[in-house]
Image (tube, rainbow, N blue to C red; front, side, top):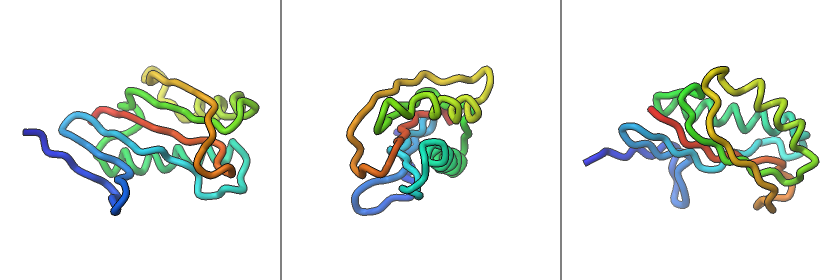
Length: 116
């Protein structure tokens, strides 16, 4: 049986869940809701990096990222942050959609699956 590790869990959710070979991250958003898309994306990616490290992996092992944007107007600015974050030669699959996020001040939310 595969052990499951839950990272930063509370009564409602875990920020990450990991098995022997995979890590699943809950949606990661910025802490600064007043920041622009560039700053919010950087903050969300910093959370992704920290959770991946806590699970014993890193962004070079990311398999898939689902990107939710509050507005398509943020697409180009988000992609600039993405391009700086992603590991060259290890670009994951990704999907990007415009959605209504739980807090209208959030500009981006990232959902990640990675290998351990």
